[in-house]
Image 1 (tube, rainbow, N blue to C red):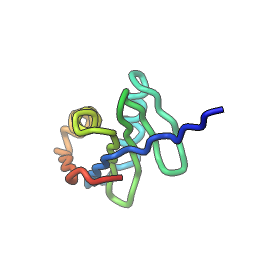
Image 2 (image 1 turned 180 degrees about the vertical axis):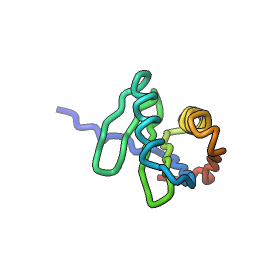
Image 3 (image 1 turned 135 degrees about the horizontal axis):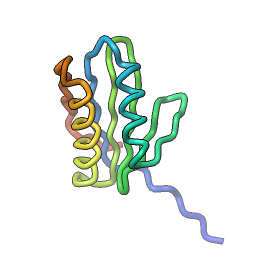
Length: 106
């Protein structure tokens, strides 16, 4: 039998979005994207799987934390774009701003 180790993501980027209602946006984002990609609720937050990348939605104190993980810059950009674009649209009245950290090795 051949054992293969699961490849860990090579790049990770994170965004902390200030909002008075992070729980609401986390639930709305996970629910909306769950119609398009697999979503798993874990103790760490909602994990989303996008083809070659993964996203994590976490609720903090006055902040919604988004994390994008992927094995390459292009796949990372897709995860970042999808999470940010939908959140900004949902939070249009609050003028939510998503600023991603520079990608770093996992």
